[in-house]
Length: 435
Image 1 (tube, one colour):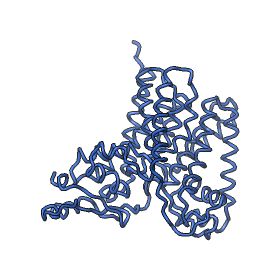
Image 2 (spheres, rainbow, N blue to C red):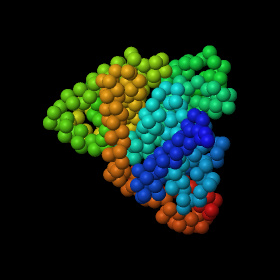
Image 3 (cartoon, helix red, strand yellow):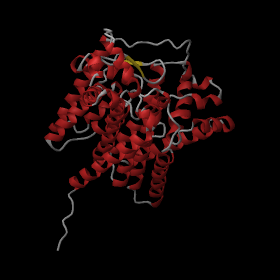
Image 4 (tube, one colour):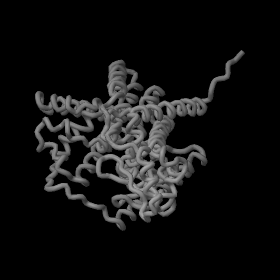
């Protein structure tokens, strides 16, 4: 009797579903219980407040800092629709974690045409929820979902659909990414791979539409420049910061340990690490096929470019990395800027491992296994992190009763509630609070 085996597409769908559930759970569990009940920064002040006060359509294309943020606005509207005020913060956290799980599942699916090893595809999918620094600002927040969309974008843009339904889905996702993360424009040249195939055209059209709206928004809504005091960022600040934060933080959340290394040994170990990784990337790119080569280049360069843009576009005294004493490394705290760059570093290493694993020689295969272990180890050992700044905020649910009492006084202004970090607030209408 012949046993019927699962088809490749069915097997892929099954594993992707398991990864979606597992990575959503991992993202949710890495957010501390108290933090899940607290809204964070723009999540409350902009997304939830605007969805609740202005309504869905009025808030959908409202820019923040000169950019579109469509996905957070969609999720904020969904959260205020399905959840009452008591469970609003938890719902926002859950929706953000579900999105991270979806990104992980999509990475597994989209990497099928690039990575040969199923195990390395699973390792790639594990990166988004397990980036060492992610719990500090990225996981469980709407405002930083753009970082995960950015990690997904090169894998989506290089994808060539085989069926029209997947073409339309990929086109919609391409537009959504560009309407939520301007920096995804950096990876749009990857859309040219497979451009001769008609099923790739809707993806290109969706990405171009999203990019056009994003650029028009930026030109029509100048970005607010915050004054952080006298700041002089040099190229060396960018380089030192990259070595000390996103590169080092790819393997540890504890920057005080990195500060100790830099203090007693200088930057040399991190420089050696960067040179070794770059050398492996060059060798892998030479041996790789066309898609792998493009992705190695995209992830390696993307990590540095995205970090540089974050530091140079929003300069602040805290980014003068080369001018600080080495002991200050542990207090840099640029988590949301470093997490996405760390994610690209880890993804580049997965690509390198997969390329080396396909060689027939023993030495490259041994190196490939070692690289894979180097990626997997920090994802496991950094599961637990200290409570984030969000954990120090006031849970939204405990403020609801007082806000309802304010509504009963007949005041015409919407009640104002507090969130994290200190000084940030959000508004909820009395009609919503009465639910």
